[in-house]
Image: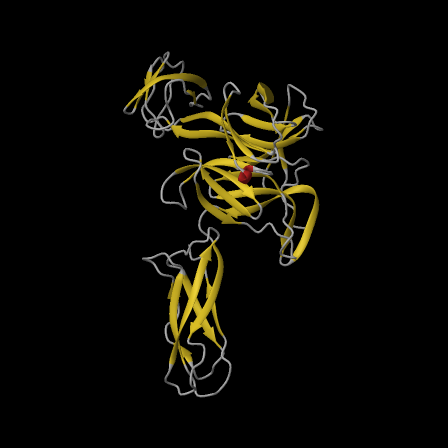
Length: 395
């Protein structure tokens, strides 16, 4: 039950409304829609013998991880998936990602232009030597251009463009590979995605035994746009700023069996829009464990989503005099452990005489504590009174 994408192999990525997986037995890149229906299969021009452990897409290229960190770059050409690069890093790895960026042309290009402008990244990650992929244009043409320098919003190229482009035509590029090395001690390796050269290695037990990760620019939850390395650690999804390696966000996931202690493995991650897709071999629904013969995705929303609500009161004992009141506090927490603002909380009680004074109450808007405070005024019957709080997402 509850199967969806039904991939045969433990790798997956998502793009443009489709899901992809490399299947070495079928010798193909398989493209499916979200209910598991095959939309297309792309034959490989180079056969692979090892199981692909992880798959990433950078907007133009597909990247695979197999064996001892053998990373390959593939590109679809004439409906064939063609091998372009192979890097044999020799690590013990099950998870990697490619640092990739997406922007758009901001001025019309007539062809032969050696200075272009784009919407984003001209003042950050685009620099001398960056290779940009322009297109497709209205004739479905692409080309790669190399950056010589950046001055303000002007990006100077080593040679003029071959084709013409309109405003908002795509610009994609990639810089580095990030590979988790499960060597017992743990390390995160930064690798030049053009040459396969190791640029830096960060040793930390935090990076050991990582099975799934991906890369994305996150701007819907945190204070500013962050180029994020996102990886699974136990029941948490962790967000690292690749520029500082600072951990700036932790999301709680629901990858536990019904016993509350057995962790369900996540084999690969993909992010599309505001949704993270976790590739798993099992899942728990409504208190029941479900295992599958094939791999299916589970969803983690990127945007703030209500995860829990707890209700407390002070004082807990009131005289039954129809006069005294107790402060009732509902604490609402999202999947990042933060208190979302302006969420409506509805309070109910089982006292026919006593009553809630304010209802509903919205979580604290100004301080972001996630608290909604109301009051219960006592009745005249001596009894145990139960007060419950219910919160809605309200988006």
